[in-house]
Image (cartoon, rainbow over all chains, first blue to last red; front, side, top):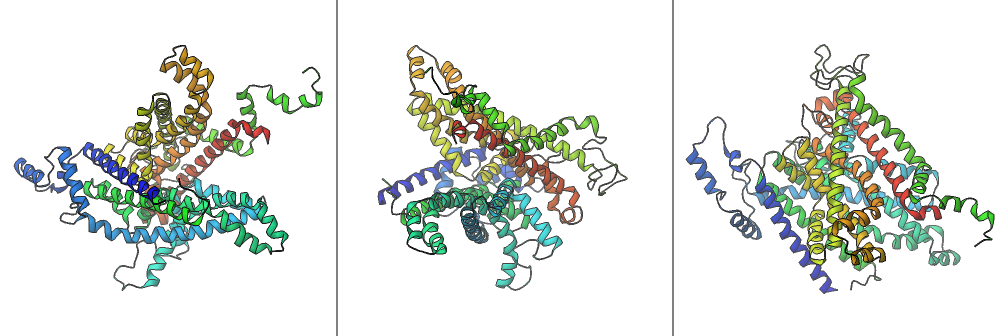
Length: 319
Length: 299
C-alpha cells in the first residue's frame, strides 16, 4: 500500500517537472520581451540601459540556464519577482491569493457535495418521477451553461435586480473585518461555483445509487423490517457515495476553471484573478508560479482522493 | 434454417437486415431530444450563414441616432454603446464561434486520430512517449492551459483556433488508441499485416472505418466544447477581441457595470444563443452516441 503511494508521489513529481519545463518553454516562445514591462513609454531607455536591465533579469542567458536557475530558486521557495509590479516577490503574492481561492472553492465544493448528493439520492429513489426528470433537466442546463454566464446571470439577478448580495470583492473596502461581511460577499460566488459541480455530483450519485438500490442486501434489510429511511441513508447511501469520492479528485480541474471565471466576474482577490491579470500583462514569473502552484494542488488532490478511496472502501486492493 | 418462425422475422430481424449505418440513423431519428437539438441547431446555422442577405445592418456599421437603444422596429435587439446593431453582432458572433468550432474540431479530429493510431500501431516506444505527453496535457485544468497558450499566441481568429485545437486532441487520441490496441490483434488486421500492408493502409483502410463511431461522437461533443472554450477565452479578453464580434466578447461587455445593470439586452441575447446552441449540440451528440451503440437495439 505504502509502495503504491510512493509510486504515485514519484509519478506526480515527474509530472510537475515535465510541466514546469513545458510552461517555461512555452512562455519563452512568446512574442514580446518581458523587459518591455519595465519601460515607461514616456521615458524611453537607451539600448545600453535595456541590455543592462536584461542582464540583471538574467534574460540574456541560454534557456537551459534560465530554466535551471529558476528551478533551483523555486525549490528554495523563490519564484522571482513580479515583472508587472516591480519589486513584489511572486511567492508571497501567490500565497496571499491562495487563501481566498481555497475559501471560495471549498465553500462551493461543500455546498455542491451536500446539494448534489441529496438531489442524486432523491432522483434515484423517486426514479422517473416528475422530480427526477426535473432535476435531470436542471442538471443538463447547469452543465451546458458556461461558468462565466452563470456568474453574470447570478450577479445580475441577485446583486443588481434583487440587491440581496454585494456585487463583488471579498470584503467591504475600508470597513473593519467582520465574519458576516465576508459571508455576505462569499455566498453568491460560492453558490454559483457550486451549480456546475453539484450537477456533476448529482448525475454520478443518481446512477451509483440506482445500482446499489438493486442489490440483494437492501432487499434483506427491508425484509428484516428496517424502515425505509434507514435503508436509504444508512445502508444504500454509504456504498453509493464511494464512486462520487473519486469524482471530487477528477473534476478539480472543472472547479478551478470555474473559479477563474467566477473570480474574474466578482473581482474575488484569488489566484484566478491574479492569473488573468498576469496573462494580460505577460507577467511571466507570476504565470509560471501560479501554474506550478495549481499543478501541485491538482496532483495533491488526486493523491488524496486515491488515499481516501482506499480508506473508505476496504474492498479496494491497490496492487 | 428453413423453418424459422415467421413471427421472429417481424420486427427485430427486419431491423437487423439493414446496414449498421442505417440502423444507427434509424435509432438517431427516433430520439426525441436529438430531433429537438436538430430543430434548434439547423435554424441557427441557417440564420448565421445567410444573415447578410436578409438583415439590414452589418455587425460594425454604426447608427448614431440609436446609441444604447432598446429593442425597436429597426433594431430588433437594440444597439450597443456605439450604435452597432445587437442582432447583426449576434449573428456575426455566431458565425465566428461556429467557424472556430468547426475548424478546430476538424484539426483536433485529424491530429487526435493520427496520434492515437500511431501510438497503437507504432510500437511500444512511440506509444509510451505519446501517452506520457497526453497525460501531461490532461493534468492541468484546461482553462489554465488555455490562458497560458493564449498569452503566447495572442488574440484573433487563427490563434484561437490553434489554441483550442492544441488543447482538444489528447482526449480523442486516447480513445482512438484504446480502440485500435484491440483492433490490432484482430485476425483480419494481423492477416493484412502479414500480407505486407503499410502503415497508411492500416490507418485508413482498417483503423479509420473502425473508429468512425468514436470520431463522430467526439466531433459532436467537441463542437459544443469548442464553442464554450472560445466564448470563455473571449470573455477573459484573450480570444476574439472587438471590433470583431463573438458571443464571448459580447458577454465580456457585461463586465462593465453600466452594461450589466442598465443594458441587459446587449449581453443576454449572446448568452441565450450560446446556451441554446450548446444544448442543441449536446442533445445531438448524446443521440449520436446512443445511435452508434449497437447494444441500444437489444434493450
